[in-house]
Each structure stands twice: as structure tokens, then as C-alpha cells.
Image (cartoon, rainbow, N blue to C red; front, top):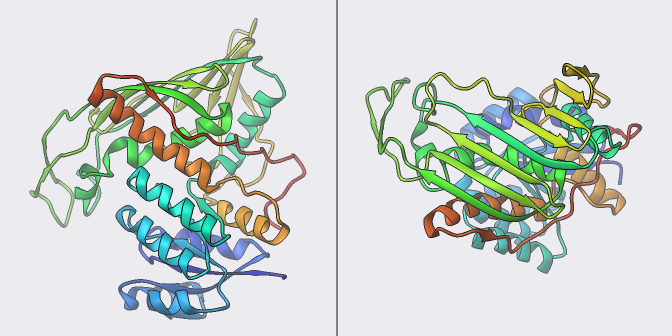
Length: 365
């Protein structure tokens, strides 16, 4: 098999970068796209020279397609993933894996039943920035990792997004919107999570949209918009995280810091693929920039798809896998559960820390 044939379900805004980047990998071929709005699928097919634009039923019945990229809205992730798996297709979905833990488990169980595999965004941890940070930790440059901190601080989406209501509904909020990037990066850096504690609040029960075309619309907020928590990793490291849609003026805090016995590592924004990566070792007075040691420093969404396709073809294990995505999904719920119930939440799931890329390894064949 020279190329793995791929189809995309969901032709909204995020589909463009996937359609563009699929052409960068010579072992995959994007042959079809589908959407509930077939005119939208047709427009994307024409723009990105995709041979087939069709309905969801038609793409799932196409015997040539082996892997489906699911780019639907989060509430539809589980239904579309299960539908594709039952049709005999491997599935890679945008984040999060699903909205509920039960849905996430059903996806993994359906894949196992049908001898198929699941992948999920984010795949940003495969980019040059975080892979360089992982390499520094693995080489012992900061000694034994002791702790970490992560910050995603912003004002919310009603000021710029054309249709921001989802971000304040169940399955939204800063933890479910941006948490997958931060938690996936932390697991890639430090390994799986053992226990979580969290505190959450809805700071503003009602939001007023100021962006067009819905300026003036009121949004009832039903999901926490400011979450702080503590993460106990299986390795013994302890992390803290804050995600917020409630901070006017944003933040000057770094996205992620890793504290080790011999130094501190500043990790780049996990919603990007590049740098900067900075390190300060014991005895040094300042942080210094570390040159990126890997490729893919630009917007390379689709790396996880390419890595998954390579695993399908070669019989290996892909990195942005379903077990990792489910572990992150459970962790996001854990912050809310801990706050709601006044308890430490012990994780029920685990996963392997994704194998880092070697210096010589190229996902692009």
C-alpha cells in the first residue's frame, strides 16, 4: 500500500488547514469530503482539489476510504466516530474525543470490537517546540521533573467569535475548549495523571455578545469559566493549571513551565507547533533560547493523522491515540467533579506517555 486513502467529515473553518496540510504527506491521499451541507463540501472540494464531495452516508460507504477525519462540532464527535467505526473505517477526530466520558469509552470499545484504531487532536505536541522540550527532559537537562505550571488566561469568545454561544454551554468553557492542548502537552512531557483536585466558578452568569453578526445577544453561561487545579502525575511530579475566560487584558504568564532538580524549562504555547523553548539551569542567571531540534514549526495540523496513517501501514503505534485522548477527557471532567463534590478525583484511566520522535525521524515520508 503506497498511500492510505482518507476522507473528511465536517467542512467548516478548521477543515481548511487539514485539507491544505494533507498534501504535505506523501503516504496519505485525501480523496473525499462530506458535510451535512453538501454545498459547503463542494466548495471545499473545489478549493482544495479534492476529487469527491458527497453526503456523510456516501463517504462512509466508499470502500476505498480507510480513515475518516472527523471535524464536526464536539457534540457530534461521538456519533460520527461510532458511525465511521461501524462502517469499517479508522477514525481521527478533532478535540475533544467526546463530550462525556461515557461517549469516549463507547468510541474506544467500538474501535476495539471492529479491530480499528482511533486518533484524536491535538497533535501540536508532535511539533518542533514541544518535541524539543521533551528531548531536553529526556536528556536530563533539567534533572528530575518535580513540578509544572500551566496558564490559559483570556477574556472569552463573545468579543470576537461570530457565534460564541457554544463556548458557554455544556462541553464548552476554557477547560474543554483549550484544556486538551495543555493537558495533552503535560502528559507528553511528564506522563499520565494519577489524581486531580480542582476549583471552578461561573464568574459572569450572563454574557453579552459584542462581535458581529450577533452583537447584543445575551448568552446564559452554564459551564465554569474559571478553573484552577492541581495535578498529581504518576511520576511523582505535581502540576498546577488555570484556565479562564474571565480575565480582562489577558495574561503575561508563560503557557507552561516545567521545574526540575537541575533547572526550569519554559515550554511554548501548546496550541502552536513552534517555539520558543527556553531553559535556565542551576547556576545560570538567565533563561536562554534553545534552538528547535525538530521539523514542523508552522501550523502543521494533520501531523497526528499522518503519524496514525503510518502506524496503520507499518503496524506500529501512533502517538495522538485514543487512549491518550480519553485520559485527557477524563482529566478535564475531573477538575469539575473535584470542585462539585469537594474531593480529590482519582483517575480511572491511564495511558502511555507518547513516544517522542527521534532526531532522525520524519513523519513526512
